[in-house]
Length: 337
Image 1 (cartoon, one colour):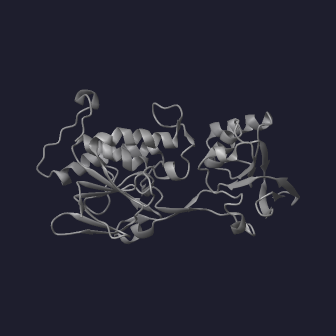
Image 2 (cartoon, rainbow, N blue to C red; image 1 turned 120 degrees about the horizontal axis):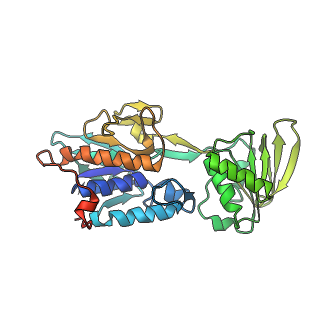
Image 3 (cartoon, rainbow, N blue to C red; image 1 turned 45 degrees about the vertical axis):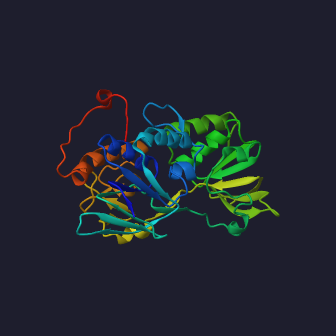
């Protein structure tokens, strides 16, 4: 039995920073994550993707952000149960939550924080014949290592931030050629990214094809070309490529979370914005897994939520303790435990 003050379900950036905020209040944390390493999507899906909206960092790679967070929380000696999924949460008469994973590992704590991001997720796959055959043979749904595409012909499909960001990144001295295909004329991505895409297209750095979709994949034994059909005149063109990366987002699935008695809104957990508590006393939800009016799914929003959560969780961990807020500039060097 692993015993701690706070169990955090999800070891992504929001879960990791919550360890820091809890540690400042002398609360110990243990994190549980289904992935084999800390960092959540930042480590598993896009460790080399640059992030531009972290305060104080004009640009930082997702993996680097995770490394920095791990360094920041090191003084507080968090525990980790990795590669396991939480299956059951039970609150007993002694006031503790008992948390059991799919492998039977048991934990207990006074507070549970759900920082599970999108929950269980899988990429949205396009409806293209023989797609399964080309998976790992030229079709990728995530970009783990950009150097894989060094001097290669790459085609990306999608109109969101991920598609735009990777097209821009890979076209900046990595891939031999980049083609971005989108089924519409307009993009859902950040305006600055759209502006940069248009500038690179005019310079010939990116081949942009709009109002079109990929309809067929060809090649033996790996992907060699694909057919693209125009949604306007139904004209079909064939493009040679080494890789096709369809980036149509992720399909979130709550998984076991749906069975824990929480108030849910579709695939998210309703919370009180006073402290990001759920309908279950002592259970909080922070980051992309929660929802409330005006919610923004940003890492910095999750950091803010974690800070307020920690202040509220203190009363559960130390019911007779005296809580006082102090700035880290006043505390001086963070000594931890």
